[in-house]
Image 1 (tube, rainbow, N blue to C red):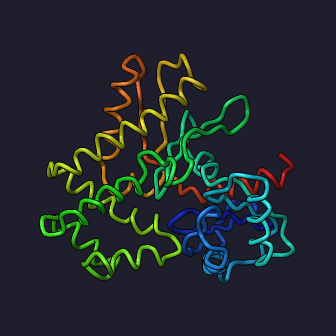
Image 2: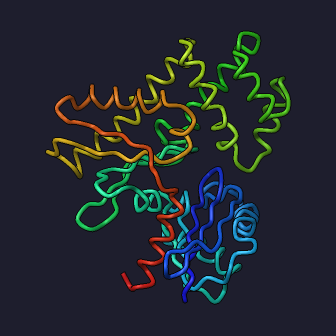
Image 3: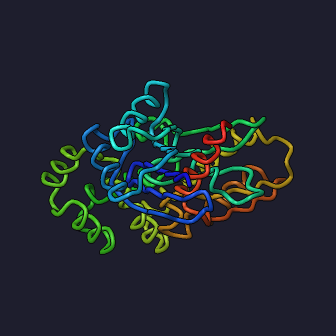
Length: 298
């Protein structure tokens, strides 16, 4: 009986799930970051090895990677997996495909917001996307963008920062003074991932109407709503109702992010009814479904 392995490889963590042909789970694992655009090669290999430790030998694998942008990226992603499972049939897709395939039936659009952000949907039988571009040029409404605002607020006003922000800074960076914090940030292989860890603290401050956080919530939610608006105009124009699946750690960290996004979408498209639901299945399940789909030659 064939074994299908899915890998959901993001900017913060890697998850692995193996199912047999009957759909029974045979293995699950977790590792570190594996963004092919920003995570160092050595760390990607380590993250994949950690996530797949003790996994049964799979017959078909689909790895869904953050940062997979070009055919060269796809080949490199496949090569990482081949090092672990040289006899398997391996496929690689962008990470947003896993979230989209894991979304509930009836979903129109999937909005991923973790360390980065991206909007995707099916159109004419293909997966189409908007946004992304990484934390330097885009990732509107991502945990990184909220974390960056919170991080700068702390560096500029360390004494007046909230207890929540101070606690996260000390836990993530292990120091509370700017020189040591910046030293650790720029020495790490994934600075965006570290900064994204402050997103939950930003939500807490926004809930308490702290000025910087309230501004961050308003501005970043509107930026993400703008990406969704453009995606709707391009691929879903004329639909009276849009069902959106929310995937990624940002939506798990605080409900205020979902609430503000819904408000911003309503302001931009008042004639459209929006339904926003947090994804029920983990995106890694979508990666397994892709492995099964490709095993059948689709």
